[in-house]
Length: 258
Image (cartoon, rainbow, N blue to C red; front, side, top):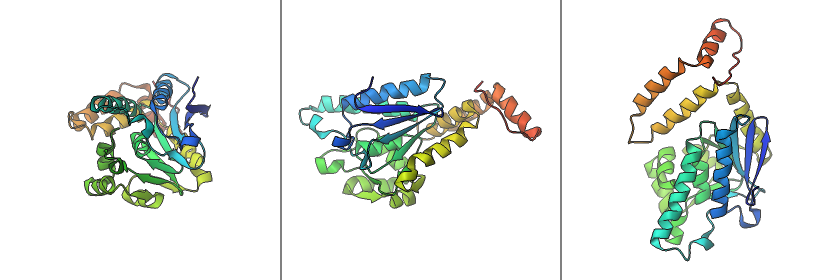
């Protein structure tokens, strides 16, 4: 089905591998199209409760966009290319099921932007992050200027984007770009550990947490109003009744996503 990515469903988590290791998993239009299809499956498949995006091999998560595709583009075509990236990455960001980026190696340019579109990030100790587009006479085009600023603050984001520097996994942790740094061998196990914990929670509540958190970065909407409405909507779910009853009865809740 896929040529540039691989998928594996394990314990209700879909593992999505960007599979161009000979190109350091660089993003091209085929990768973006296939990634969009994989995320569609996360949305629609009831057996999938979460996803992990990572890179094939141990050198790179995604080392950037495939620059060979850029040389023949006009300004209008460049904008269209960026628009496609925006759509795919927003689809990841808005996914009602948790999506973790497991960053193994280089996450540069479009790779860093892909990681930031995920709900949070775990980095291997060998991970490197950066937005080096200025070295090519470009800027981040898949939402990087916005998400990086939201995650690490305007000053640090501007420094990273204007210098084109790379930062280590430990620096990314200090700056708030990643949640955890682990040994490469522990990367996917750590993601699995976190997701298995999340799987014990109410799926509809998880989806609403994601929606409300995303609203905090959308100045076109009132995030507080969305939170109020989503909080109220929880009371119409069987999961809220189950969660409250289980708490009172001092037993583990069994959520059904209803």
